[in-house]
Figure 1 (cartoon, rainbow, N blue to C red):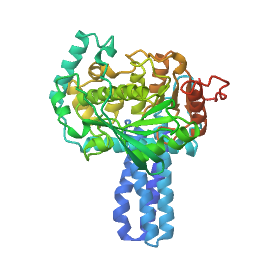
Figure 2: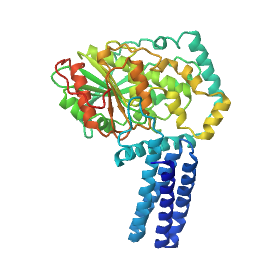
Figure 3: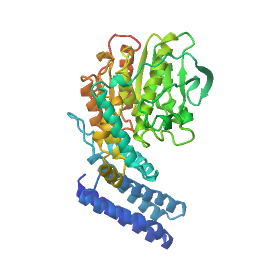
Figure 4: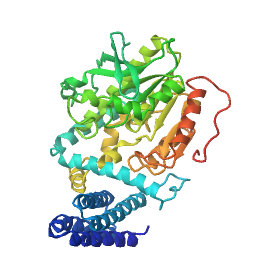
Length: 476
């Protein structure tokens, strides 16, 4: 859908919205007018080729118009509601198309059916979440950019002096064995009975600039994981690492399809709650401070996640698990990639829709004004890259066996774009990769992805090296 067609579609949506309000009465005009103005502004911005945040604003305006149609329907104005609903749908489709137009495919691949409702809807869902995350950064207190830049420069200088840029594994000390744990049986809605494992993290951030502030956040000092283990003794265990903003076990268990992995494949499972997430967020939004706070909290939180995963894996092995594998989603995929560079004993490592290079992803959620202020203060992607070197998967070298690696990625991913997964694929010496035709939050083609994952887990973690399932056309 060309830029001109998108502009015309938005103009038509604005006209339809005004027509619907005229049919409903003057009260509706007060609601419809600002929405119509928003769509008209989006049409003009689209024609001019405005920046990366435009698709999100189009979707917000169009979604509001669609909700306006629902309000008209509830008031009894059926004809006006239909017209407003059609106008909103036009806008939503156009916003999704605008998002797809900004999606750069992975080399050697094309966007699947770029004009279809499926691809457009998948992109629109991701783009809406990007807009929400951007809104939270805009509503957050203004950053002390000068103080942050000074701290980042100190860390970058130290990383260069200590060789962390060349050997980031040196920044991750081997953690002590996990011995003191608390276990209790809990019921997880939709996922049956599990064991809740709790232990003291004992992690201390490496960088002194934010060490005391990070350690003062008490809710994060105790690690928490949930275990699904079979009653007939230890089995190969898959450790699942959730994504940013997750960490609510009832939802995470559904996202990981615990019933299939535990009951269908017969694996034992361990789901670790990442630092600053879920019950470790201290009543704040899950994940608050992990990617949207002081940049050194990002380093501390990821260092803590790796520390706790290594302790958990060691404990599982001492409990008798014959093999331990890692499976991470989004931010968890990033974490899994780093973990796989530190623990050669992992039987498999599967990053799914992974974040790979954090600086561009984090900065893309900032407003244009915030990015301009950051550049003026010296907060650049290059500085973040050097300060965050200790947890950059593209600086680490994978230590998990080549045949144990598998990547799962979405061709329409607008949160962790396809180029991110492609970069990790190249860095990991081109292991098997399965491209599914969906996005980050709309994994269309999930069945094919699940079949490919199952085959990999049977061959590696379960040790069944027989004939694997056929490769799909999305594998490169």
